Image (tube, rainbow, N blue to C red; front, top):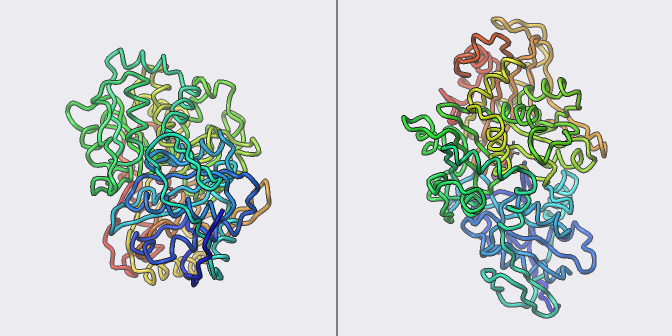
Length: 543
Ligand code: VG1
Ligand code: CO
């Protein structure tokens, strides 16, 4: 392969965050910026002979440009082939599946997930390894180290490739195969779930509404819900993908998925509602006038998995990120299976799934998934819920209330303070760090502090240690407050406060989480001095 070697200067800010490198599009458009990062990825890997790279993204602005550049750098760095989703599209879970199914030498996924898209918004890139999962910290750190010393990158002398026509093209011995981004994924879903049972559920008049938020799941949802499951066309909305996600914020939560929330809380609400994010790995689950917190959703899925075809043999274990509520821990205990607590970010689940220790994983941030791929998977979660509903024939609310009756309710909420000046956010964290040792044993209202720490994790499989993963104030009754700075934002800092209080009393289960957590919220503000240090009166997003 003929290629040019192009001289470049390092950028100092190419440190991958919770889920890859995320920056403004304008930053990625700086000459050499994307090229440097991609070359740094390839410099970190030992690319074997005849290797194939999986490539695709969520279709946001700059996706197509980046894909052409990455194809050229891959060709110049010894890849024999690139498999690219048609139009440059692959949802994150679909990309994970393609890597695993075709055993490619990992893949590059282009997405800034739930962050808005368009020329003035965000773009992102990450490398997933051969197991289909996000590169672990030791690889992302090596990529960052390379990016700080890079002096040149390689660009193959090939023209832009046609990424819109299905099939194989060859140029100078290098192959580009354009694949259907949906088919393999839809087949996988059909292998895991009882589509006949779900079809039968729709035939009873059961109504659902899935909101693709103008993002990547549009074509996936149409194929799965409409074509394969026979749902009525009105069952899906916002399925036309656009480069700026219709100007919206493709984050499936109560604030940003307001169109869907209005429908689900309206007079003529369907029985089931769901939404997914920019790159299709998140999910929000709603019933008629009812919201299921992601932490409860994970617990419910764990409790009911056995009745679903793909999990009828039982689940080996579960894992949740540290800030996710302990609802799933109780289910694990009752099933007598292990439950692991990992730092935030899907990359920490990979080793556990590869080792067969866990089948289901989840995060409070609307991420749920299983070992069918190595990413969280939005549509998978929606289908799992549909499958459970098809068998149980109860409402979403009934299923959740019965679960709480059995296990108690881990009342949960996350308060986000977005776009705080970085120094103010750091001041809050510093204040907490300094004051935490003095909190132990103190009582706040009905809550007594048992311990405080900065969460640290040792991977049980490879022994790698990750420190400073979130500040925890743990109370004696199991309630807790967690403070963490986001690692996915591109502007200023986002401070997340995670609140959890256990409520065994079923008489209170019907109450709103914000009401039940009122006292906890005040304690969280008091301990952090957030108002004093940032001037913020209230959170920007509450979920
Ligand atoms: C957020 C979530 C985290 C999730 C990550 C990537 O990270 O809290 O749970 O894994 O986004 O999700 P942070 O660092 O901003 O809290 V996705 O859908 O953006 O790839
Ligand atoms: Co996402």
